[in-house]
Length: 194
Image 1 (cartoon, one colour):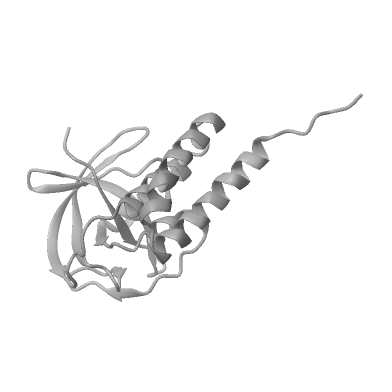
Image 2 (tube, rainbow, N blue to C red):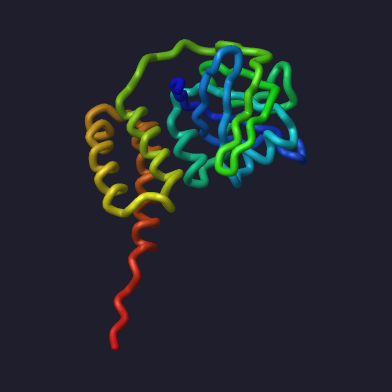
């Protein structure tokens, strides 16, 4: 199995708008492979339009924002496809779907890269950014994980946040923590007294 990389995927909607969502992708030979879950807007848009853009950003607020209702990020039109990409991306790749391998849970879209551009230098890795990405993955699976696992994972990830986070990472962490805390509070059922 190949490595999974995390990016922001943008897809064109039926009305000509751009939908963004965090998505892990793989490089397999000459293809970039996207495997969104059933059901999702990303999946529907890929099926309908057959195009997408991967934006590579070090601003983890975009990842967290997509999962917590903070979706208003500036977009710029792509060069070769009718879709937007993140304006502040460090780099981006424009994709056309060449083939779909069907699956009941996660169909695989094998895409050809038709354009790539670098826009800014990569400043380096940061542990807090990695912790935010991991917390995003937890939030994307709230319905699948136990409360105990969520609390243990968040406590561990908080170590990197407290040691290495800057303002963007703190903001993203706050959004994710609020989403998880709200989910856990909703899971608790009040005791019924006779």
